[in-house]
Length: 56
Length: 361
Image (tube, rainbow over all chains, first blue to last red; front, side, top):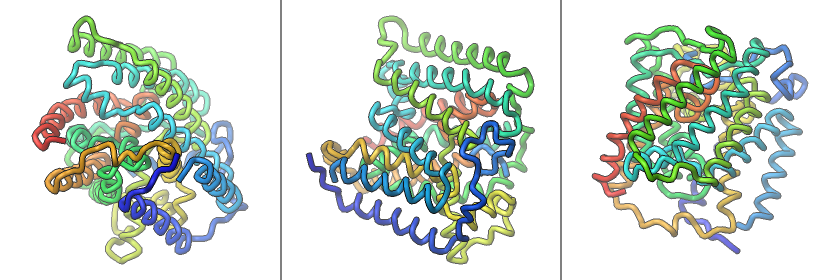
């Protein structure tokens, strides 16, 4: 079954794709040799990401 | 687009993440897809569950949410105690900003018909208002975080961790007692004769709890949504020269400055957000368009909905999370702020459903 995307949906997904492409282009290159641990639990490393519950 | 080519695109993105970013982020993308698929497939709406309890005295959605919280807490709390340095809880400070933010968020989510996760999965499914709300949600989230320090100066205490204070099993017992009280309050409101459990929602609750646990184990931090939105808007504001993160108390912190300089694909919240959008899109593919099932909104409804979307973003940062970051992750990881968030946001929802009726959503 086919589903036609509305113009708003096309604009929405296009905006997201453009944003992620732009972000990838302007952000610092990813250093794959400093890859975070696959599983944080047991890694011995403190979490380093931002979270909505954190003040800073 | 049908599911097969869409699944192929998502598989290609997964491989690209694994190759060019990190395997962890690729796995978190899959976790996000699972979250989006469960939210959309089970129509697991936090906002709808509260609204149905308020307006129709239907407790089935809220009971599923209580099960989600209990199941997530049963695993999270022992894990946090076992890995105190590797895993972090969603600890927000009890504060004036929490009270204001949770109340406004509770009202706005009823008007916008979606909380953080709800806006994401409904946008992924193609619901017009939620797609339009997402960018203003991001702007609001960014502005709320940028002004967070001023709000905290109004009064705040240190975050309280039930796990650190009482121990994991004591904290879990307290959490279960609190959830039982909420269930009894719902029973007192609904009265006898209601249908208490909805099988689809209960299955959704268990699956979401399992995925939230995977998020905690893999990322080292609980499931969140709104930080990612704020980060996206902050990146744009910084790039166009409208914002100087070095001069802002929140964004000048090392973790946030680092996130601003690196790809959003390295941010754990952003990658699960992208996964939720993708998972919902996958569920929606092959079904009739969500947009076609709804009556078109009037100009006034669009305006009210967009304003509500902005307030969702702004207030969620003052409240240290939405239904996911503050309620699900806060309560399941033993943060006192989650227990403050729920009743205050529910009071906001009591107002929100009236505003929703006023504008005939």
